[in-house]
Length: 106
Image (cartoon, rainbow, N blue to C red; front, side):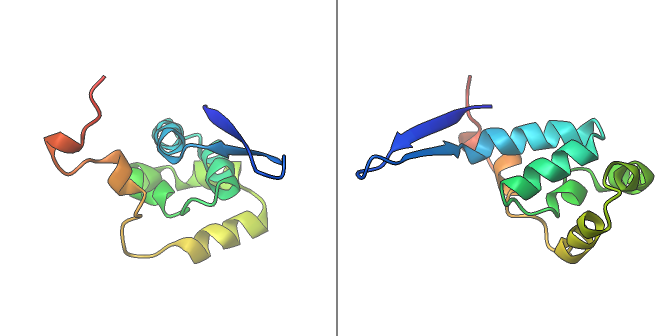
């Protein structure tokens, strides 16, 4: 994970993480059903938790027992349930480009 340290005018040091690498890392964690790690990372960086369902809905539904085992804290489960909605996560737009022009070429 990349992290950038910025020095503010008053001398404070601020660390920021770039959102797109975080999203790709979260997608890899979700695809490998490491829901606990993905949940805590998304929660820490204030990324919509609905992304856990949106990445691969069928795989999530079939592995929901793993999700519950890895996030057994009641407050985590409540937070996840309240964050669910029918719309796709806005973060999903970064993971699935609309056209060939939007794809980052390596």
